[in-house]
Image (cartoon, rainbow, N blue to C red; front, side):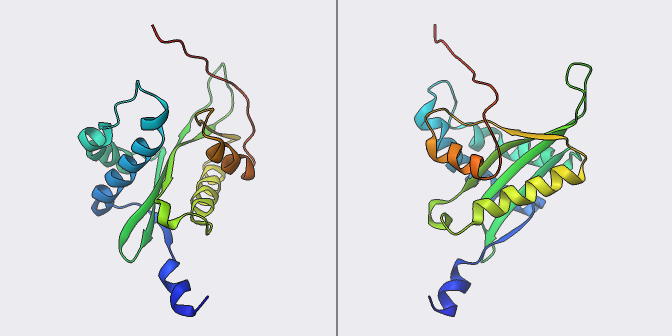
Length: 163
């Protein structure tokens, strides 16, 4: 691989800014179309286009939320969103939830997604989380393997019945 090829594939993980919202919406739309849109007919795949701007704007203002972008050449090519929840009487441990992560297909396979997850895990630890969690569709074997490589293990299964 030449130096130019390495440079072309380099991406930066950073905290999202307000000007990233259009790219975040596009990234979220990609996730919805590729994941929920092919696996869950009850999900509105147009949600990111209709509500993503307001959702990301609110997340950027919320100190209990993390929004990261994966950037290449000034363009958002992926994202991660996470949150921290405070302990409760039922679950007396602070938890961090990886809510969504997406990397455009052209940028997969060279550790970009892993870098997003590593940044999330570091953020969770900095915020005192005693555990982290993520959900994935049971038939998304690639996502499950990805999360397992980062130390996540199955704990619960959600069963659903359509009426």
